[in-house]
Image 1: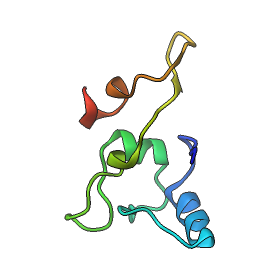
Image 2: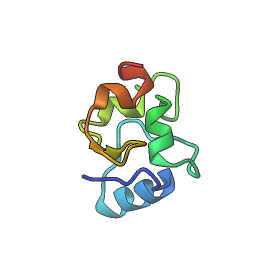
Image 3: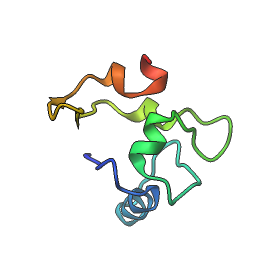
Length: 81
């Protein structure tokens, strides 16, 4: 699935429930954006849940120079910075 960085965790949660499924790690802070939750390596509701970023397989973003990038290792703190 493709999720925009500005989508709130609540948006993804509501959509997932309407489709009959959920992520293994669902953040409890519903008003955070998905981009913020992912880039800060936030875990789901409960310390034993893995970071949300563990379920991301691809990231595409526009850098400060206006270039479209897909280098996941430079995007997420737990994945390379």
